[in-house]
Length: 454
Image: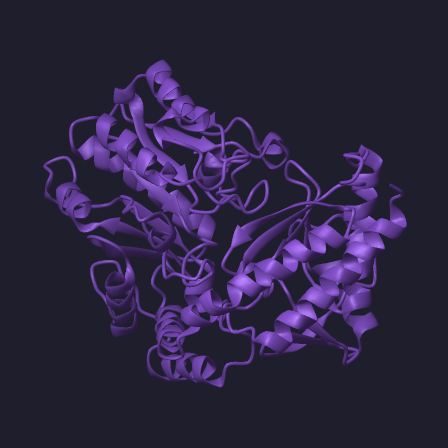
């Protein structure tokens, strides 16, 4: 079956995710094979996967060792639950994650996606406080423009109005605080920064005794790869400790090497109370997410007369095949020193992105770290002219999609608070792949400048 036939079937029977109808009606690629950092479509065209799928294919495509681990597990034990029982793949994956996670974050509750991981953290925070005699602690704090998932609980914690509006009313008691846009490096004492003081103000307004948890990403995806200023995460830790609030580090994108570390702790130096993860844990070879909690918190919930059980679970949670894949993926990442690859290449890659900013008038800013970047666009950085609303729509919906096809490099146009290009290559990318990626980005920026006059 050729590409046109498959596209016709897809349009009739396949529900697309976050896809506008004009894009679904276009000649979108249908991918049939993956090889390293590249994807091959029905026409035989080879595309560089510059977004690592959706920030997830950290070990690259076509890994036969990971596929073999999945096949062996399917043939041995395709399914068993974690409800009052267990199986070796989930035990092994949880044990491996505990070895790599910071502090006493040693208990993993497996689910199937990042949204479910955040949902799990929300439910754990509420039930934990209830078990400790504080049932009034139900409120959540998260940061402006942050994306934390699509299930209704996770969507409530998300602070992106466009994707929340169609589904209200959502969970009550969720407050937004400023993110760290505009703060980078040493900005002075972190506790004196307005973006930190605003958190204290919200806590006082709501009442500290009513707040269950504060959610934040080590590097925030929404609004474009926001790297926190020095001391920011320690300030969050101090605030949460002061008020008895649980600190949740949402690392669905950031964990398992995306920033050059196993977890956000490598960047922030701070141990949170919970970590949510998903994407990179299996490099996309199987669906898996999870919430890692401090062992003390789990013991306190289970040991309480009002606890004894975390009233939460899923049929596929800790699925044998997915957890076997996670162990194979994480082990390969460790054995092949993939984190060293990211840390070794990141400075030169960042320098090349900065060079593109200087040579293209349409680049306003480059933000990020490791193998995770946002390129913020505008009409002309020389004159300071931003895009008009129509120009932004043209760039995001017409220019960039066509440019991805022309350059054979897949990235993501982003409209969350600005017009941006998200860059997130597989963590195994070498010099040749990164050169290919940078060449593609250069071409995309040229296409934007052709379409939008200064």
